[in-house]
Length: 496
Image (cartoon, rainbow, N blue to C red; front, side, top):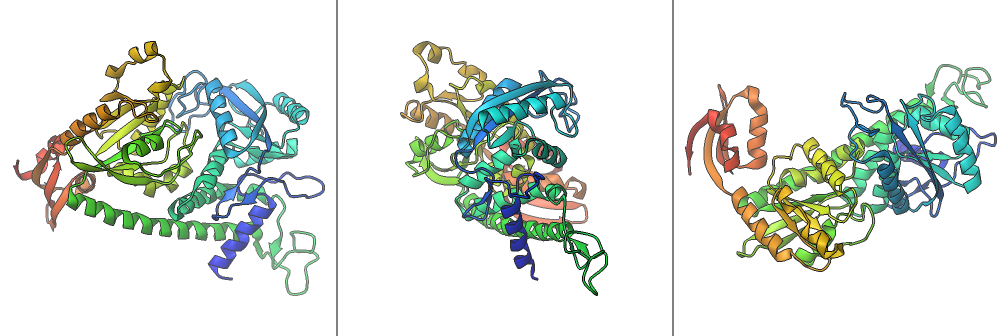
């Protein structure tokens, strides 16, 4: 069987049996768990329409309860979280609604650390079971990333589908992906999420070659078929790894194409401005207001997923490219960040970032922090930024007057939906772009031990020539003036 056919069989099996998101509930009848469907675009959807969901949140009091990198969460928050446990659960409700679920109830528990088997304590699991029965719920959504064994044990105990925060966000992305690039990246993230969960999905699996009629084992097999064989789990794991490799190759080719477009833009010296911000902050509305772009504008989390680029004119007549990127959220799943690396490269190569903030949101400060953390993870936090405090049309005159614009880098107050403040934004953007384009000509020799500086020169500058000598890489080109101090120790010659 070819890899392509084998991959199709594996995906169909997991779509029909359990979907990609969770483990198998070992019910006596062996029935498939409802609500998992295959999307038309090749991605998988975990939620069926109008499923009734119970939301579960946890306030973890131990400083190491969720931290994976040694950082110390504060006030019961997860490592990487910016919202309190209560606010995070409220955000989970928005995510559930966006995915198409109806919230039938919520449950929270304060924990020193998660239970290794079921995340919640035994008594809380019983309370959750009663709440599920009373509400007539179809699924339970956890505001955490569960381990495969926790997910399976909870499904066995509650006899219904369990979805964790990561699976829910992946489901929304699967629904929203429209372009081929977006679909490939979502499918990659889904399979990366599925791979470590395969062993839990196959609680009972058959063996190829040595399988008995009723299951695994060598006894009862047909003549000349007894033997250790190969587990179905191993076959599926190999097939999914092959599919992951294929998806990465396809996404890599897309990234190469994007690099060609970026090189052309660099030669044309057209500045690139990237819109970043928390999901539902109004980035797409701002793109439409500035460029008349025909993009989807909807009051939902992750309403737009695929990047859109349009040309806009600054007050002095200079043109620049404005790119809308995927919205951020606290604890953005690492599988998504890795899978969407090709899309997020647009942020890496932008000259200026416009950070759009929903100033009316009660957690706007925490959302700003979450965006900054993500930009830091992407290693683009040093870029020039214009901070747009959006949706001021929803504020009272007193609240508008009290906006602390001075606290934000190049802060501008706008109402993208009505056009208010856009002239001031364009003027501010023009000033920041001019500063970012203040470039110097450099000729440097970078030691081979400092290869990261060669990469920085390529990413932030325009390389006119590159040669390899016995002492290092010699580069000639232009760079923004703000990088002059970084390359000064390696300069061979420099001129204005």
